[in-house]
Length: 223
Image 1 (cartoon, rainbow, N blue to C red):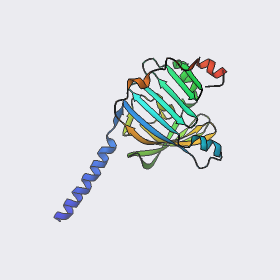
Image 2 (tube, rainbow, N blue to C red):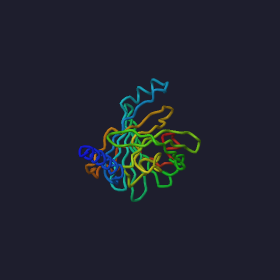
Image 3 (cartoon, rainbow, N blue to C red):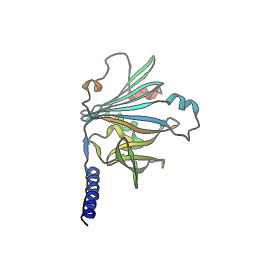
Image 4 (cartoon, rainbow, N blue to C red):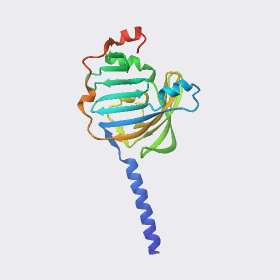
């Protein structure tokens, strides 16, 4: 009887510990989040797959500001969001072609307008991603396009502007589908570093780029 009691106590303790971890929510104010970009197997464009092979996305969070970088064999594209002013700078660095596109808060809202009304349906399906328990959700865009995402409630971004596709989720998107041009890809977190992010990551280059407004970039077909 005593052994049974000890066993039941141990099982209950493990269960309680698991429940406690699931309920603990860490506010994400400063971190570096690395996503691997995987070409979905259903894609039938081998050239696109080759160009995006080994691509990564790195998110730098510092307070209300963020920097999102997409790095591939084509080059690097970075989006810097100033949390205080709401202004956004888009940097496109593709070899000799280097563009800086400056956006006002209204410009930014217009550029991501298609994601404004994303709604999510939640499912009792879970998986571990980078050590975090993640729940399945299916997002639906205004044009009825759907995508699957796994998110964790254990990490709650204070500033959600960087994950505009998934900003309505009650947590951090750890794995999700997205369209990159005509190519379907999956973003999956490979690592989260909670060390302080250097302020320099939010600095705007003073030279080396052709500077354009949002309207100019649209007219040139760059944005």
